[in-house]
Image 1 (cartoon, one colour):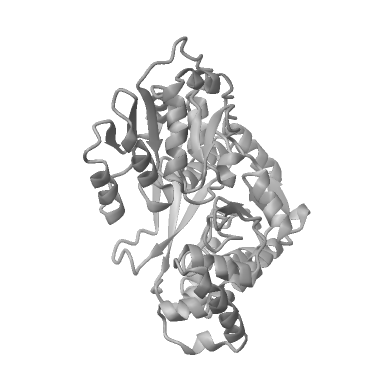
Image 2 (cartoon, helix red, strand yellow):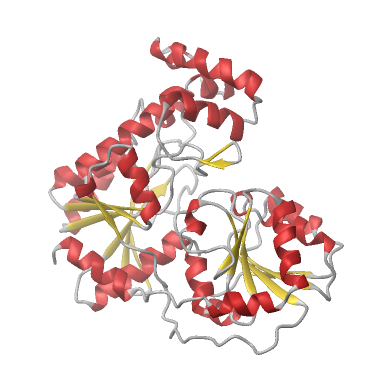
Length: 429
């Protein structure tokens, strides 16, 4: 369902069609899924292998990097069995699962090693690249990043977080955090060390991979800012990862109320569905309707969002949407809303909306801004601001013809075979 998974699946299928042998390796975290280990299975014609990771991911030693994942030997044994020429990572972790340690083993194994960065956490501890209410330039700095983490993740006010960050930078020079048990206090104290780890691991990725693939130019600039050599970075832009036959949708001749808004994605806090629900409270069903597509989750966030919209007759929870229905469904709507509360790298759903011929109303974060030009092919609103989102929706309701203007500037996305071809050239096969 997720963008990274869809991306990997589509790439694997196209690589198979080019005559390559393709396998996907995933970690099996015993702590979460005891007794369900399957060494090999086939998904849509692609061989999938699992290796066992027996460690407890909540163990402090794994988060701090003091201890390596226990499944490294299992990973190496699997590589020896499969004998790959190319090992291509599509996301890492900082506790267990795939880590920089796995990248090092892949290099020692002798294969060509690549990593595609689908998220911004390689340079940002909070993964949102927002400092206060402003976009951060992404430069890794122990003090600034520690302070930002305290403010945004722990909600500690600046009057407290500023001296706390300075104190903990001093304490970390004495390695005090290594003497403390796992807990919130230790997490706060060790934050500067965690920031330094992010910086060190980025340097290691540049050292141990043949090439780092960025999906966007903005993230390439951020990697360069943090010392990654330009010769180690390749930009391969996002494309439409479906088999949809893209054809230009002509705008309707006469826009009309209600405006049909649609959200498509995971119902999670970082996707900020609550902002959309909040922003729509001031509109009637004759002005707008909102279709929300996403898997029903047994989480407090999902339940709270549904409860928040209980009295809104224009909000409809549609459940999970099959991948082959996405573009067709989006084409029945007027505008996609993407209220992300973090800097998504290059949201696949934007490509799907453009394939459907509709514009996007999105939060003003890097990943959205690279594709959406405010007032041309979409609209951008202030990060985390339900008030500004409401204003943008109001501008459409007051002038429905704005939808037609935005639609006329929507350009069709690239097909994913261009991505597969770029990777083939990069691999050298």
